[in-house]
Length: 130
Image (cartoon, rainbow, N blue to C red):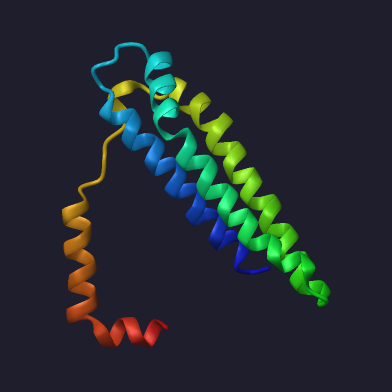
């Protein structure tokens, strides 16, 4: 069960990243309500399908004979459901209170360059961590 928080954090962050990206792309829309509405209209199937397929994948653990694996599957399914709930209901509420100009997209090229630098130049450091 120690892996569950990491898994849920990754799923939640990817869901929120997609929501924020679509939200930021619709800057021409003036009202916050309409921006949120357009963003969720565009992303709703992707959110549902990623959460649903991941939950179905973890539901396979429910038919195992080992209780700890069954518990892991159940906790994973509940956590994935909570992550979807938060992306679907809590994220729009938070977006409604964030000023429109305060959301900035990350410079992915800069992040990619840093990761490549770490992979090439700092191999010993990375291998010592793992």
